[in-house]
Amino acid sequence: MGRLNIAVCAVAVIAVGILLAGMSNANVEDYARVPFSPLNPAIQHATILFGGDMMFERSIRVAMEKKGGDYVFSCIRDVLQSADLVVANLEGPITSHASKSVGSKVGGGGNYTFTFPTSTADLLFRHNIRIVNLGNNPLASR
Image 1 (spheres, rainbow, N blue to C red):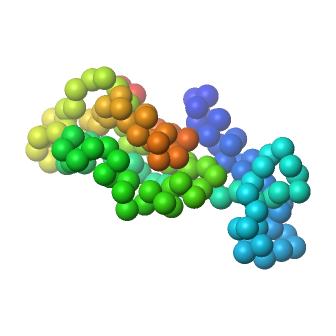
Image 2 (spheres, helix red, strand yellow; image 1 turned 45 degrees about the vertical axis):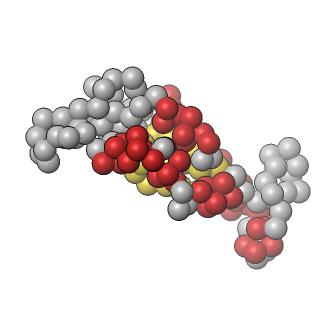
């Protein structure tokens, strides 16, 4: 397991521990009113959002080139911004390499080779996505 995956797991375990420790004798709604602060132990609430696979290739990449990257998050922007931490799986690496899957045929060469433009890092940050992993994508780093 790589350092990034270990860090992601550690953050997730710590965050879940903080949530569970604070919820033993109270209503979840009570904690929703108080923001999380690691510097103030009296505040015991954090909203952590775990997202699934994020894909910025094929038709999504084409749509982002036409309408801008923010377009793909337009329907969930408020949900992402309301969380204290957003963690999700990235379906490929952020790289300056050209796309191999845009315009490829299903099952053909390059169809499952995902590369996301370098602007993806800023896009994720603007939409409050702070931690991503590539853990379940063994070909992503090749």
